[in-house]
Image (cartoon, rainbow, N blue to C red):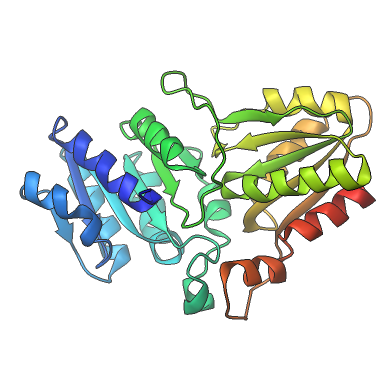
Length: 305
């Protein structure tokens, strides 16, 4: 099975053969996955090197003359390092860009904090024109990218190295960003992107060992935010726990919490996210444990809610 990064390259290669405006710009990364693109599509693949703000600057110039730039590199360098350029070149000037990252959260586990990125979604949410997608599977990435890459927006697609591996029926025609994965009556578990895998494991334990029957609501985008499925669930359960591999503020939980206040009865909630810098090195599972995103911690928080 190919990974999501290769799915990204395959999708862009297919689209670029039909859409002459597509240009791919990378920061000395992912050359192997774009082999077919470079072979089939001449003069529209640029390795600018490790100077991410300059790449964003160049992408703005290209978009000014009708090119649709796809800029790809590691999340902290693509968003955090290049924030001023995204703000002034694309936010202020109302230009279109597709920002596609790898290495979000702590996917690059062994490279340490310099290569971690928990806060980039919160940063991008400051832009009214930003669309933020966190697909948890290959088919989700391909569907969301095909549906939105032409939007006159600041489009952000975060590729994960650890997909949720769950079979969700994705509508390839209708634009949809939230799904009901499991039906329950006692508690709503809200999962963003690849955290769906942990949510399902936790729900199984809660049901089998603690007789807590869970609704599971899955999101693969924060903006556009699609609250209807979530609201139907918490109207029934009156409590929810949100799991996301993002910083404590500026993520999905805030959107859910604002919606929950529209219900007359009090809705209890709990939030599992990345509260502090992770100074440790280790496997993805080890860092998830340190961050408080383990299945065991989800179960414990849910029991106490």
